[in-house]
Amino acid sequence: MGRFAEDMGRLRDEIESERIARQTLIADTRQEITDAAQAFISDLKTTVETLQADFREAHADMAEAARADRNAFLAQLGSSVADLQRQTVALVTELAEERSAGAQAWRGTAASPAQAKAAHKTPHKTAGQQKPPVKGAAGAAKHG
Image (cartoon, rainbow, N blue to C red; front, top):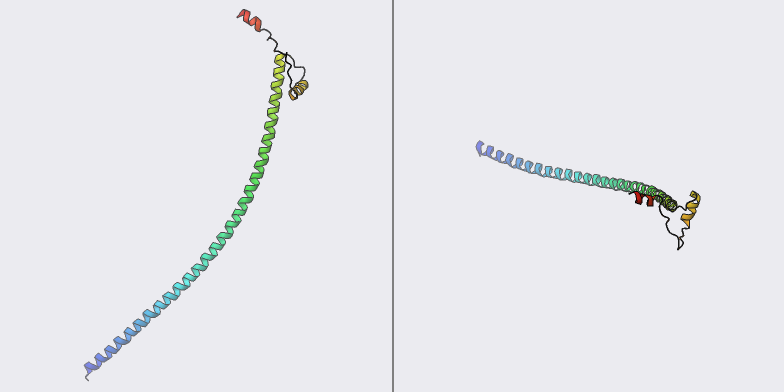
């Protein structure tokens, strides 16, 4: 074989060895990328699981705090409503007493505030009791 044939044989061997080296490099690179991707995915899963556990714990803490705040608010609201109910009852009672005292004064039967309160608690009307005529009403009708 001549020099040309030897060079061609050597060139073919070099091409073959470079092709094998390229295929090995591609296979090794694929394996490295696959290993790196699997490690990344594994780390990512661990991180996500940790975040989810932390979120669940934080959510439970927030729910407990919100429940405590809500219960405290409702307790305070209940006492405020009870206070308002007591005040309303007191105002309605006072208004009824004043109305009764005014009606008695209008009829001319009121004697004292203590008697007016007593009369309000036990109101009674006799069958023959009528409203007295208004003073000055007859004079106003004559002059009008």
